[in-house]
Image 1 (tube, rainbow, N blue to C red):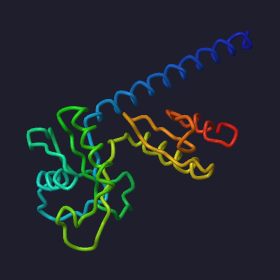
Image 2 (image 1 turned 30 degrees about the vertical axis):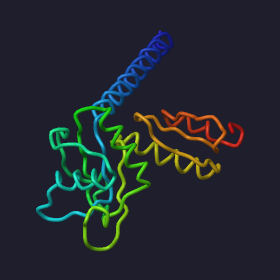
Image 3 (image 1 turned 90 degrees about the vertical axis):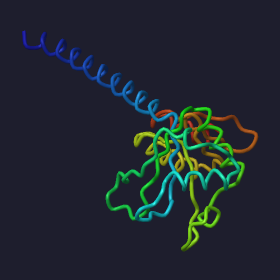
Length: 191
Protein backbone atom coordinates (compact mmCIF):
# COMPACT_ATOMS: atom_id res chain seq x y z
CA UNK A 1 0.00 0.00 0.00
CA UNK A 2 2.89 2.40 0.68
CA UNK A 3 4.23 1.83 -2.81
CA UNK A 4 0.83 2.92 -4.26
CA UNK A 5 0.97 6.28 -2.44
CA UNK A 6 4.54 7.08 -3.42
CA UNK A 7 3.88 7.44 -7.16
CA UNK A 8 0.76 9.58 -6.62
CA UNK A 9 2.66 11.77 -4.15
CA UNK A 10 5.46 12.16 -6.66
CA UNK A 11 3.00 13.10 -9.41
CA UNK A 12 1.37 15.63 -7.08
CA UNK A 13 4.77 17.11 -6.20
CA UNK A 14 5.76 17.40 -9.87
CA UNK A 15 2.49 19.20 -10.63
CA UNK A 16 3.12 21.66 -7.82
CA UNK A 17 6.70 22.31 -8.95
CA UNK A 18 5.51 22.82 -12.52
CA UNK A 19 2.79 25.23 -11.38
CA UNK A 20 5.28 27.22 -9.25
CA UNK A 21 7.66 27.48 -12.21
CA UNK A 22 4.81 28.70 -14.42
CA UNK A 23 3.84 31.31 -11.82
CA UNK A 24 7.46 32.45 -11.47
CA UNK A 25 7.74 32.93 -15.25
CA UNK A 26 4.47 34.90 -15.24
CA UNK A 27 5.67 37.15 -12.41
CA UNK A 28 9.02 37.69 -14.17
CA UNK A 29 7.24 38.72 -17.37
CA UNK A 30 4.94 41.08 -15.48
CA UNK A 31 7.85 42.61 -13.57
CA UNK A 32 9.74 43.24 -16.82
CA UNK A 33 6.59 44.59 -18.49
CA UNK A 34 6.22 47.14 -15.68
CA UNK A 35 9.65 48.52 -16.65
CA UNK A 36 8.98 48.90 -20.38
CA UNK A 37 8.85 52.72 -20.26
CA UNK A 38 12.05 52.99 -18.21
CA UNK A 39 15.63 53.87 -19.01
CA UNK A 40 18.45 53.04 -16.62
CA UNK A 41 21.32 55.53 -16.56
CA UNK A 42 24.54 53.95 -15.33
CA UNK A 43 27.84 55.40 -14.15
CA UNK A 44 26.45 58.92 -13.61
CA UNK A 45 28.45 60.55 -10.77
CA UNK A 46 26.38 61.29 -7.67
CA UNK A 47 26.29 64.68 -5.99
CA UNK A 48 24.45 65.76 -2.88
CA UNK A 49 21.43 67.89 -3.82
CA UNK A 50 21.64 66.94 -7.50
CA UNK A 51 18.75 67.83 -9.81
CA UNK A 52 17.93 64.65 -11.72
CA UNK A 53 15.51 66.45 -14.07
CA UNK A 54 18.30 68.83 -15.04
CA UNK A 55 20.68 65.89 -15.58
CA UNK A 56 18.28 64.04 -17.89
CA UNK A 57 17.59 67.30 -19.76
CA UNK A 58 21.35 67.78 -20.26
CA UNK A 59 21.56 64.20 -21.55
CA UNK A 60 18.76 64.98 -24.02
CA UNK A 61 20.67 68.03 -25.26
CA UNK A 62 23.91 66.03 -25.60
CA UNK A 63 22.25 63.28 -27.65
CA UNK A 64 20.24 65.84 -29.66
CA UNK A 65 16.85 64.59 -28.54
CA UNK A 66 14.26 67.00 -27.21
CA UNK A 67 11.74 66.07 -24.55
CA UNK A 68 10.03 68.02 -21.80
CA UNK A 69 9.80 67.44 -18.05
CA UNK A 70 6.16 66.45 -18.61
CA UNK A 71 7.44 63.44 -20.62
CA UNK A 72 8.96 62.10 -17.38
CA UNK A 73 6.67 60.18 -15.05
CA UNK A 74 9.34 59.64 -12.38
CA UNK A 75 13.09 59.80 -11.90
CA UNK A 76 15.17 58.53 -8.99
CA UNK A 77 18.38 56.77 -8.01
CA UNK A 78 18.29 53.11 -6.99
CA UNK A 79 20.74 51.17 -4.83
CA UNK A 80 22.78 48.37 -6.39
CA UNK A 81 21.78 44.78 -5.73
CA UNK A 82 25.28 44.24 -4.35
CA UNK A 83 25.72 46.53 -1.32
CA UNK A 84 29.53 46.39 -1.67
CA UNK A 85 29.35 48.02 -5.14
CA UNK A 86 31.28 51.30 -5.18
CA UNK A 87 29.91 52.64 -8.48
CA UNK A 88 27.34 55.48 -8.33
CA UNK A 89 23.73 54.42 -7.87
CA UNK A 90 21.91 54.08 -11.18
CA UNK A 91 19.19 56.51 -12.19
CA UNK A 92 15.84 55.12 -13.32
CA UNK A 93 13.74 57.37 -15.56
CA UNK A 94 10.16 56.38 -16.32
CA UNK A 95 8.84 58.06 -19.47
CA UNK A 96 5.24 58.46 -20.59
CA UNK A 97 5.56 55.88 -23.39
CA UNK A 98 7.65 53.03 -24.72
CA UNK A 99 7.96 54.88 -28.05
CA UNK A 100 9.55 57.88 -26.33
CA UNK A 101 11.88 55.59 -24.38
CA UNK A 102 12.90 53.77 -27.59
CA UNK A 103 13.51 57.06 -29.42
CA UNK A 104 15.76 58.31 -26.62
CA UNK A 105 17.76 55.06 -26.66
CA UNK A 106 18.06 55.30 -30.46
CA UNK A 107 19.35 58.89 -30.18
CA UNK A 108 21.87 57.73 -27.56
CA UNK A 109 23.13 54.98 -29.90
CA UNK A 110 23.30 57.47 -32.79
CA UNK A 111 25.40 59.80 -30.62
CA UNK A 112 27.86 56.90 -30.25
CA UNK A 113 28.08 57.19 -26.50
CA UNK A 114 28.11 59.86 -23.85
CA UNK A 115 30.49 61.10 -21.19
CA UNK A 116 30.33 63.48 -18.25
CA UNK A 117 32.05 66.37 -20.07
CA UNK A 118 29.24 66.41 -22.65
CA UNK A 119 26.72 67.17 -19.90
CA UNK A 120 28.86 69.67 -18.02
CA UNK A 121 29.76 67.47 -15.06
CA UNK A 122 33.17 68.38 -13.69
CA UNK A 123 35.71 65.93 -12.33
CA UNK A 124 37.27 62.91 -13.92
CA UNK A 125 35.86 61.93 -17.30
CA UNK A 126 33.31 59.11 -16.98
CA UNK A 127 31.42 57.20 -19.66
CA UNK A 128 27.66 57.27 -19.12
CA UNK A 129 25.42 54.43 -20.26
CA UNK A 130 21.72 54.42 -21.11
CA UNK A 131 19.98 51.06 -21.19
CA UNK A 132 16.59 49.44 -21.03
CA UNK A 133 15.66 48.89 -17.38
CA UNK A 134 15.94 45.13 -16.93
CA UNK A 135 14.90 43.04 -13.94
CA UNK A 136 17.70 41.56 -11.85
CA UNK A 137 16.99 38.17 -13.40
CA UNK A 138 17.34 39.58 -16.92
CA UNK A 139 20.49 41.52 -15.96
CA UNK A 140 22.05 38.27 -14.76
CA UNK A 141 20.99 36.53 -17.99
CA UNK A 142 22.52 39.40 -20.00
CA UNK A 143 25.79 39.04 -18.10
CA UNK A 144 25.81 35.26 -18.70
CA UNK A 145 25.01 35.85 -22.38
CA UNK A 146 27.88 38.33 -22.76
CA UNK A 147 30.28 35.86 -21.16
CA UNK A 148 29.12 33.00 -23.41
CA UNK A 149 29.23 35.26 -26.48
CA UNK A 150 32.80 36.36 -25.69
CA UNK A 151 33.86 32.76 -25.11
CA UNK A 152 32.51 31.73 -28.53
CA UNK A 153 33.62 34.89 -30.40
CA UNK A 154 30.17 36.36 -31.00
CA UNK A 155 30.53 39.95 -32.14
CA UNK A 156 27.20 41.43 -30.97
CA UNK A 157 25.08 41.24 -27.81
CA UNK A 158 22.25 43.71 -27.27
CA UNK A 159 18.81 44.09 -25.73
CA UNK A 160 15.64 45.05 -27.58
CA UNK A 161 12.33 45.22 -25.72
CA UNK A 162 13.81 43.22 -22.83
CA UNK A 163 14.87 40.36 -25.11
CA UNK A 164 18.57 39.57 -25.22
CA UNK A 165 19.84 39.18 -28.78
CA UNK A 166 23.18 37.91 -30.07
CA UNK A 167 24.82 37.69 -33.45
CA UNK A 168 28.07 35.96 -34.39
CA UNK A 169 28.97 38.49 -37.12
CA UNK A 170 27.41 40.95 -39.55
CA UNK A 171 25.90 38.26 -41.79
CA UNK A 172 24.88 35.58 -39.29
CA UNK A 173 21.30 35.22 -38.02
CA UNK A 174 20.13 36.93 -34.83
CA UNK A 175 19.59 34.58 -31.90
CA UNK A 176 17.21 35.44 -29.03
CA UNK A 177 18.17 34.37 -25.50
CA UNK A 178 15.18 34.38 -23.14
CA UNK A 179 16.34 31.91 -20.48
CA UNK A 180 19.59 30.41 -19.19
CA UNK A 181 19.00 27.07 -20.90
CA UNK A 182 19.03 28.91 -24.27
CA UNK A 183 22.68 29.88 -23.76
CA UNK A 184 23.47 26.58 -25.48
CA UNK A 185 22.47 28.37 -28.71
CA UNK A 186 25.75 30.27 -28.36
CA UNK A 187 28.24 27.58 -29.24
CA UNK A 188 30.52 26.74 -32.17
CA UNK A 189 28.01 24.17 -33.44
CA UNK A 190 25.16 26.75 -33.47
CA UNK A 191 27.06 29.32 -35.56
